[in-house]
Length: 447
Image 1 (cartoon, rainbow, N blue to C red):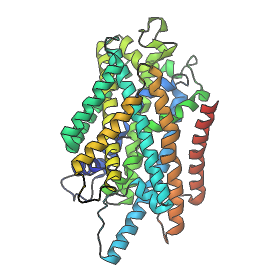
Image 2: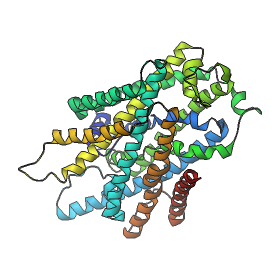
Image 3: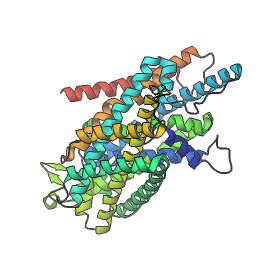
Image 4: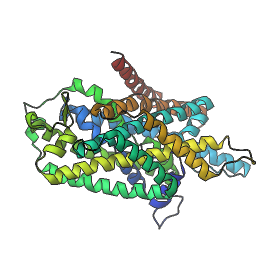
């Protein structure tokens, strides 16, 4: 979840538009690139850890199932967004007016379909979810530095340095610098990932993944579903993508389906490499930083016990860059959301604060609370916080709200255009799955 409804989104839109077309209509590949770059992030680091008890086949089945569910939800969000864009265009044409809103955000979509109260609730859920993610990212940063230095660097100290250093960089560098940095880090992330897969696939033992002695437990997939949900979510980008493609329904649908297929294939390949190595390795030789109170992280295991310094360095670098890109995107999205909300109360001409001051206030309010609540030194904390975020926040925003918004808009529009066939039966099915995921998480925590 790397982007928010912000100025950053506008800058990304301008950067990915092809020079041969108008800046109000982007390319299919540009939209797909946004999805791919957003999806490959911190969630991928948690997947091998949370799926090691399930095995490769059940975890792959779970990933494909979650992907299919999220594609349906994404198409519904695009349907609502584009239909509202058309309604807005008709209203502007009738009144000869022009709206300054080039992107219909999730809050706007919720307000126009389900009411202002739900719109405000959506913003609150988004901010709560993002704070959970920032806590998880900072926790992982501390773990990475502590692990890489064999405990010489205190995780708490490195979290402070990373968070406060990022705060200063964002304040003095500004949104454009942050966006350029994010693009550069994403390119490095993809390069590192492909290098790891190229080296790792050569040593992948298929018998360990599919053989009779391999662990295959579909019952163990359940606890991994929230992490899979979190890993494959790109839905905060859908308003941007709809605007970027100028409301073109066909290209938007193609971008959502094909753009999300690439990360799915990469995640499955990542699972194959990490789980194969994990199953083959003799636990008696595990580094003390990897094996703690019976907990083994397959990613850390690859770093310390792969037998190849190159693979270890690549995985270590990939882990940090994955956290950095996710942290950067989430920070800018949240800070711009806070700035936007604060600007509504900044109407007094005599005491009106500048945009730069509001942006810095937003950045401070974004980073200081997670820094204060970050739990350092517990390898399981990263998984636990991400699981809460995926199990509750994202399930509400991207598993329950989309069918409700689509149903309401279909009921009120004269001739709505559907992106997902099946009518109310399909909407009810997607809504039921989303509610079931939420109930499952509540029962899991209660028991």
